[in-house]
Amino acid sequence: MFYIFFLLVLFLSFCLLFSVIKTGRFQSWAKAFRIVIVAISAVVYTLYFVQKSLDQFVQDSLTVQVVNKLPFPLDFYLIKINDDADPDLRFETRHLGMIRNSYYRIDYLKMEKSDQYWIAAYMGKKNLVYFSQHSVPNKNEDQIIEVQNYIVQSSRLADIAKSRIEALKFDNIKTAIWMTLGLLLLFLNIALLFKTEKVKVLK
Image (cartoon, rainbow, N blue to C red; front, side, top):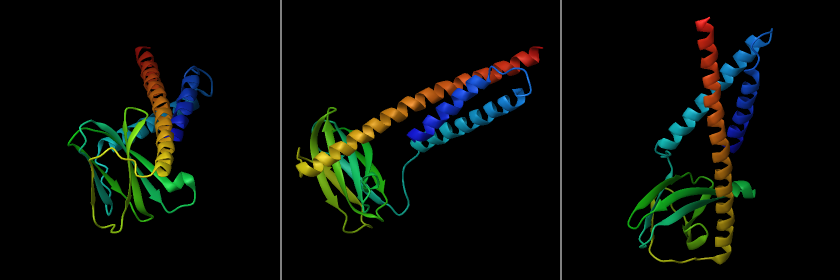
């Protein structure tokens, strides 16, 4: 998603530059370009927010329910291990979110190319207090993971999980920055388009 929002920022910035073209033979082309880019940007942002607000249920997927039995809220991550030699494709990292005591979160995993996943939990931003490795012998049977102890099953695998989680956090920060900038540019372009139309009507 980072690259999509980055491209939207570039095109919306061009729209602002084209908004100064008010006369000449390129005026119609500049306005048409602005309208198209603004419309596409609005659709992309709408689809993104709708997707984030809907249930992430996936048909024919494995349901994983993570229950926090510990007395303190923990920040949970899930890392699915795919059967792929490429490190960028082998590890699929997801942020389950902060789970309070006696609460749970559910995620849905497509396991066609995978037979295991990891669960990691942080207390605070840097303190990894839980790590577990889970195999999936039966991909048709949903799993419930109850976290009852502060335990790190494998230090070596936990270090790999930390690096993947840090990469996910960094990517989320980049995406959030460009998404926010894109929204600001989108609203500014919409305001300029309506302002232009209003001036023409008054004339």
